[in-house]
Length: 619
Image (cartoon, rainbow, N blue to C red; front, side, top):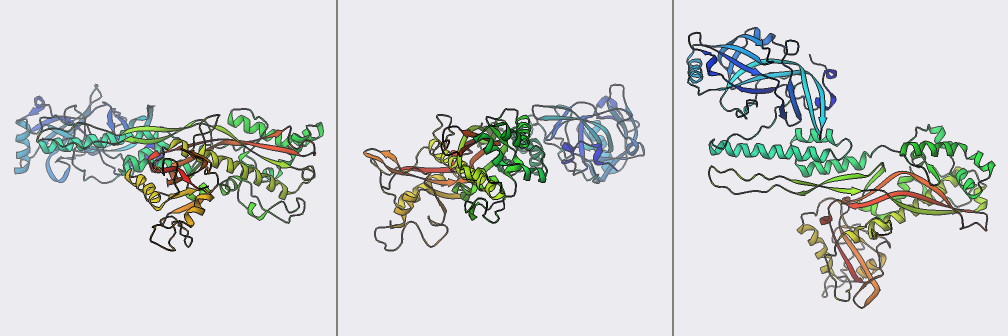
């Protein structure tokens, strides 16, 4: 029995069928009419492209198990175990590293029929079925892996009528094997198109094979753009899912399985020992005593800097501290500063709680390292109508990337002199919670209305061209506007996923008192009696959506509104928080302003997923 350790892990995912085939041509000169025998070359070391990579069969006496064939295995027709037409007399491996077998045909009516076709040159294709027991990964280049099969076992030889690719001498039968399933084997692969002089039915089958190969190539190309994507791509190809389905799987994987973090291996006891207040005291007063008190935190910061490959501007806070349990106890040392709304399981969760975008299902990619590229499909295959015996033009999907690179966001919190003198976990929680809130609000503002200039990310309103126009000088929001926003997204076939609205408080107030239709009474656009107040969709409200826009003569009194699939809005966060001191603020009172810097970027996977309006009059 084959053991898993015999085969690379990246290949084991495809070892499910126990059936693999290759095909070669019969050499008519090797046919002995008197003895009713033929010499068949059934294996060589010619590299063969399968959907999961390149396969090379090691054709040596130590690699090929010939016991089954030498023990008198039958010669089959089209891999049908019930269609026996001969017996295998002998097997040899030549100095040219080609496996050959001498087969003798029977004298039954069926065997005579097949034998005569071989003699007449009508049946020229032979296919061998084999199982793989061991393989080695010998090369990986441009996303394509090459495996040398160092232990394999042929178990039958068949005459086949329709090989998938007889034009190049190596291929596989188009029929399914009926052989027993082995623990380790590789699924048969799509093949290249056959000559165009074949019948129309075969030509159309070849077109499907070409599309499958292009499909696999596109998935492999997308998978190569993300860590762990290559393994996911192999699984996707095996399952036969579409490029778009694989893209959704990869995005979901990246959002839940982020890139390596800035963890430095702190134990729970060490994480509890880390003190943000020690850092704050040192930043407020960099005396020798405070520097000694911050020794552990400085060591942690240096370790984070080594992991991230760059120096801190101030002091790095390890990821373990950002995920430290923040439990609010009795509010004594910090007074009543620790509010109940700060209860959360991690810094990231508190940051998300500060953003209403999280309510709409925005995709958060946390603990990133280095620039990243999110794959996306930018074009699809084309359908062609063709005449009889004419092959369609080959087409394939096109793939692009959504690029994200770190841009620094900063938030701050002021710590009084009295608070600095405390040593309570409650105060630590208060500081972290306030920093999370400030950062969350700043990141949300950039995600919605970031200009893309002055080191800002480009937010939704910058990336999306307004699709609904209120009027020359703006217009109060109407029911028609709501319908038009939804229609624009649906027209682009993008009305899937976590659909919702994002507006500011002024817009919500207008919508609550505006009727859907002039003739109605008590049927406002904003349904106050449901959690899905805008035409059955969720709606989040934040004043980060601007209300000071200008349209025509309406100066600074217009608001924006956004509708779309917010899972296509991606917010990426890199590494650890970098804490710095503002040397000017709060200095006269003996306190300190701590500035938290976080590398962030924002991008949109598909701009078609959103529709916007920027000239609603809400003054």
